[in-house]
Image (tube, rainbow, N blue to C red; front, side):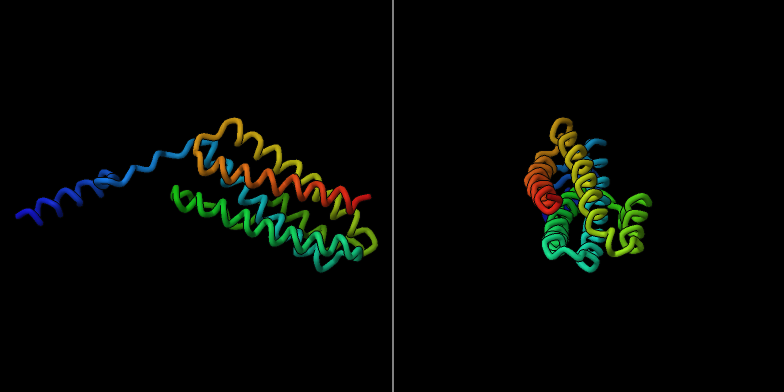
Length: 168
């Protein structure tokens, strides 16, 4: 009898989305959802762009930096993905059409123009990611997502500094 009551209570709690002793997940804000989706696309773009950069760069410093960008953005995107899974938010699986166009441009630009194009566009992309992340830090609600945004800021600053150094 007691087992039936427990099973009925557990089934009811499951339907209602709560279980005894387990805190209910709050609905994520539109800001948090929009940030996770947009930054996912930015990371996916940065990963693919940096991979092309690693293959196409003629300057060894740019090639090395591109490899570091790949690794860093894979790690950052994993942290973003963890939050999306926790909140059960569907994430995009590819960069935006504009980001994909830049990848195609990277693949087709003459070799002697690649390094300059890569550095200038990566600086612009990181500036855009920083702007998006700063907005999340000002307007986001979810503490775990804010922690990921803070982690992103540290990486973005490091990337921007390294890009500026190779641009000199």
